[in-house]
Length: 157
Image (spheres, rainbow, N blue to C red):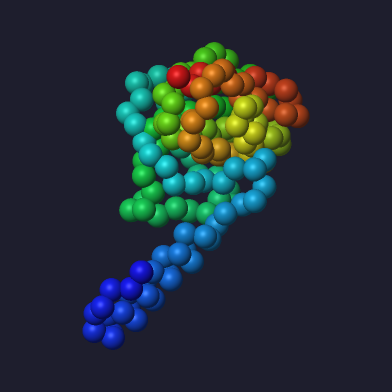
């Protein structure tokens, strides 16, 4: 759609629109098995042992805070000597919330969120991150593939 404006404004508006479209298409990963950080909303989750600040994933593209909405629920898990901290349990989030799961393992592995078919590589000692919109209700296991540890069960209501 074109709006009649002085010629300079029309060109500037078209250039701005084209730039916005090009930037919106950048950074997409076609492989659904390995999640990359994405922009999404946030919410104040009740404090718990599993709610902490998210760590940065090595190799992840940094996002701009001004354009990235806050995360609704941040869940951080550490694995050391096959022990999950905090201990395995259920974590409930609301449908539509933006969830960020950060896992650090002392051995290389792969994180997997069942039902959403999302995953992240877990290099030893380096946090892996999965971020997604909880748009499916139900009970979903979050686990590691190589060591086959259940980290927690995610309940989306």
